[in-house]
Length: 199
Image (cartoon, rainbow, N blue to C red; front, side):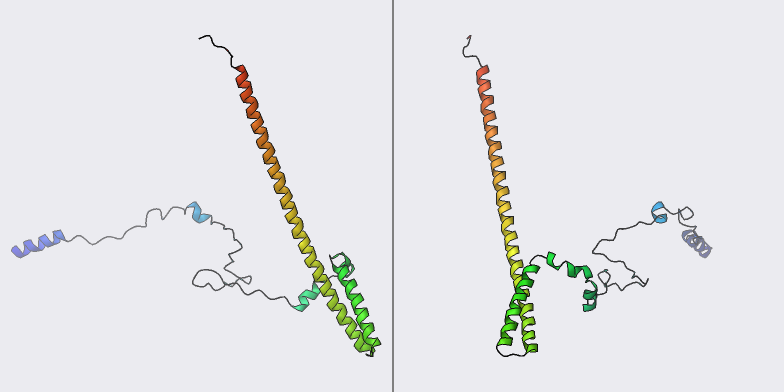
């Protein structure tokens, strides 16, 4: 009898096995709006698309940034393709180009003629003339550009000084006008006061 009572007591303590639970709340409902409509993010200059142009995802390092392929260096062919026929007709419009070319032509002619007069053969004299033309043109062009740069810097400083002086004059004139206005207001207030008293 005691064993049956103990068995009944243990059955009452042990809970029945859990039943099968149903779906979580909200599982049958439609997904929220932020799930149905994905966000569109703007890609800034520092970021990159995780997928390449071929649709193959690029490898991501541990930091999470995508590795962009190194930019191809421009070649001589790319530089030649950028030259247009109109560029040859507008060389004189480049600043300092005319002065550099004239200096190079004059220096090349003098050196070439001098080498020919002093016994050099025509091909050698022509080489000296061409080399002097290139060297003289480049040197004169760079000297002219440096002078232009210094002139622009001096003009910028002069404009800055003039603007500063104008601002100082305007501030002084404004301060003088304010002082004169205050003096006039004080004089008007003093004139309104009576010069005598009844008490």
